[in-house]
Amino acid sequence: MTPGAAPRTRRFVGRDGIRLTADVWGEASSPPLVLLHGGGQTRHAWDRTGPRLAALGWYVVAPDLRGHGASEWSADGDYDLDLFADDIRALVTGIGGRPVLVGASLGGLGSLLAAGEPPGAAVRALVLVDVAHRPDLHGTHRIFAFMRRRPDGFADVGEAAAAVSAYLPHRPRPDDPERIRNNLRRHGDRWVWHWDPRLLDSFEDRMDPPGMAERLLDAARGAGVPILLVRGGSSDVVRQDIAEQFCAGVPLARCVEVAGAGHMVVGDRNERFIEAVVPFLEGAIARS
Image 1 (tube, rainbow, N blue to C red):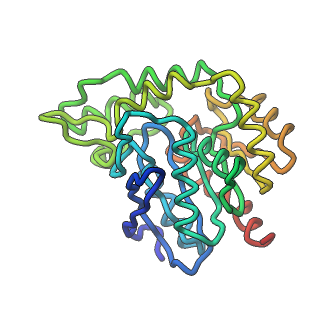
Image 2: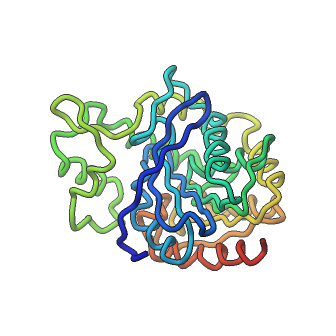
């Protein structure tokens, strides 16, 4: 398996029969690892990470979450966090073999609930990518403002790439703006983001509801597996003190930082992200 190997496609069924599409790398006989993207992203957030981890001996599954990419949308427009958690439970059952869950932002929140609340998904370990029990609301408001900024979409792919570069000025401009096409879909003569726009209403209504921080901490403790919190060193969503609070409240959790990365750690510093998580992943196999 070479670092640039193309993925295969696999289909799964989530809660209430919703159909989920995933990219897969590696051999099915290898230890399984599930990569779960953040809100407003797609499985293509892991296009560089998936083949690298497969080359290191993992069976890597990267699904589009419901309402994102090639997976189905919720018929009623509901995107409650419990729905994502149930979808992840279904993914874990479909994959088998007690996978490690690697969840960024929304994917991490869903992973915590899926593994730490009944019926707990049978997982080997959790990696939370710049997500903890609560966010810095300044950072989340900035994300939602960007997601709402262009409801009419873009005239072409280059215009979308320019918008992302303006939003993420710390990240080098991509050599090939066409790569962003994987995160877009055609809507008439425009290009729009490849997710259900009703997601935003669900997310903003439930951004940091009363009791959620305690619920997530309880879930992290209830999962009963090692947890690695990978914080972007420049993140405005998970501040250092929030990461420290999480690890202080969860005995099996520890934190590492990826210098030079913001909230979207993998997109900002993919190689440093892989260097940060590989020792933890190797330890998860050694312990089981």
